[in-house]
Image (cartoon, rainbow, N blue to C red):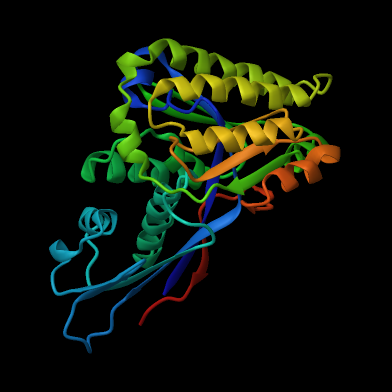
Length: 326
């Protein structure tokens, strides 16, 4: 039996420039981190005592005699890709799916990590990321970018760059005290709305929003400079979040809603310097940059929403339990 633990990601800057249609022509980059909320995938070979060959447990339970009958596309295609048979696969998570945290990609990475371990193989982070991208974007034909799979596999606070040849991951190296201050100045709330990222991505054609994406791309470098320059005012990171969200809202009709706009405006009025909706848009989790002395005011303004405390993490997808099968 194998159990993997894979973090969710929080994307600050550059979202949208990780789409192939954009970065293969113009390059792209994102600034993101993973944090201490995870999905867990358990995989084991199914004992030969049942009248079904494989079992998949997530929000529903599937039991099939043929892997082609598995309804969950990522599980079905991953088992085909790695030639896995007669498995019991279960999924659990600390936070809900379809909420802007890259949950589906974290699941894909964690599942592939578990399948390789079940086969007795160690898999490096780059291979996990590349296989998860291929699984979701090619085999499952889901719209979206590349950042989620890479963040989940690698973990940590990174600048992830994209070009016609692939991707590169560079850790953002800053003093622990400054990184802790950044973490402490961020507040995350669940808006209560969920959506399919792929549906929103389909609505937004890169050709229709190239100017905005160019601006979003530029902000990645500016935000990174704020973090790594110890003489920079860290609050500028929050102001840049406000700016990138104002641009992001203009990249598609479904990125924001009247309810989301009201929530954001309430946070700013209560003292937040900036913030953004995480993920492609439409709902899910919202993060605000708030100085410590204003955080109680923001909590009161968000009193109808669930506040989610979190800490940055650095490990990416891990095998946390390994028991060889006889």
